[in-house]
Length: 172
Image 1 (cartoon, rainbow, N blue to C red):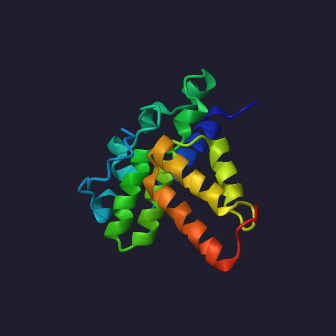
Image 2 (cartoon, rainbow, N blue to C red):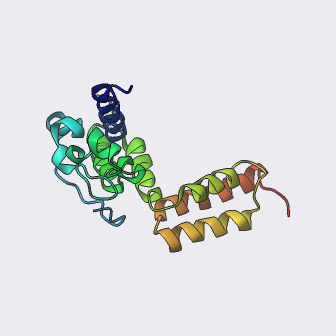
C-alpha cells in the first residue's frame, strides 16, 4: 500500500529541486528581460515567488498534486522545468555575481525546445573524435534555425574551432 502523504511529499520535493536548480547563496526563448528579481527577497522562487513558476504546460506549482498525478492529470511534461523558470534563475545568478552559471541556465532554457533524443545525439556528437567540423557546424546551424537556440549554436561552433585546433575532430 502506498502512503499517499509520503508520495505527495516526494512529488513536491522533486518539483522543488527542479525549480531550485539555481544558485545557492511563457517559454519564449527570445525573452531575457530582467524581471526585477531580488535574490534576497525572491530566492528560492518556489517558496518566495511561486506565482512566477509555471511548468512547460502552464501549470502552477499548486496544480501539481499527488491526486492529480494518480488521476493522470499531471504528466511527465508537467514536472519538467520551463524555459522561463530557467531564465528567472539566470537573472538571480547574475545578480549574485555568477555570470557563467547564468549563461549556462540561459543555454539550458534554449534546450527546453529541443527533443531529449536530439540533445543526447548532439552530446554524443560533441565528444572528441566523434564528428567532423562540418558535422558540428551543421548541428550549430540546426540549433539556430530549427530551435532558435542561438547561444547553444555559438557554443557548438566554438567547440568545432577548438576541436580543430586541438586535433579532436573525426577525420572524414
